[in-house]
Length: 326
Image (cartoon, rainbow, N blue to C red; front, side, top):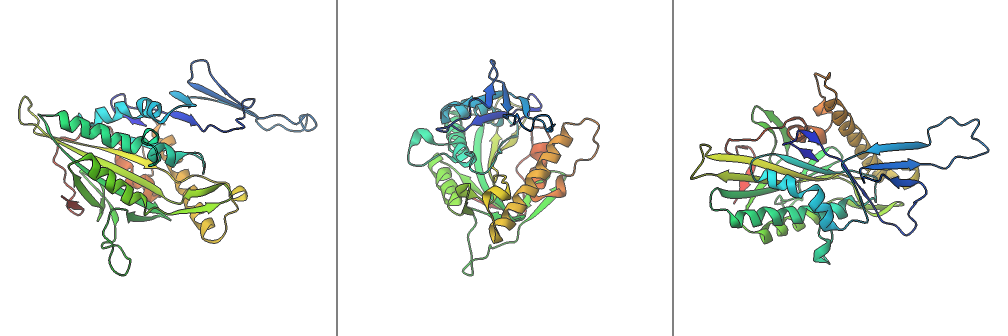
């Protein structure tokens, strides 16, 4: 999570509950902000084996046996509140294939209490707009898929031959990075936003392999654009912000997933882009680094503003080459 007010990345680990949880190998710190992993040593090979067998990671919170509501309250609620006053925010769900990333971000439609971060963020935003008299708030959304290093608009109208109406490209300009050709939809009600979300979700690329029956084969970025226009009590007439809610495709070990052919090609693209994302985040944490290679992948390039900048926008929404749909 990019917390722009406090200007640092916040990291949480959600532990997927399983019937045979490895409690002897995974331990949580008493403050619930540390996780320790210890592999069992082979007594016969111990003298010859010098490989590391234990690791300790410090973070902002460990979410173990945690409900969807608790996850949202801990990870997302404050970020969405800050976006409503003009700060950009990003939540990325990262992990191995089958770890529960899509469940965390989307939840399930069968049970209302199991809805994920994205539907809850939409609900919070529209509750705020309903209560707001000044400023007047306009909400827009887009849904971008990155599959095999190619950009797809999950909310676009599709032509009769099955091709997208416009080839999309990433544009880096003084106002920031945007995707040329990506449709941006104005929504007035929570139900309309959810309808578009579920429509886009139905178009995502998924596949089955040995580790996951419903493996996401693409990175998906659901963006909520918030435009606040002030009429009274403010010198600023318009403030814009955006929330990027990202369900990353899962990393996978090819030897365990058994991926071949098209699945192997997809996995290669996924692992490569996740590796570049790791490199960018690591470079951003190094104060001695002057240059950050955002353009190494479509994923890091699209997220350049969210990963590398921390500023509130006070300009009207200007994405002239995108299709704003009201």
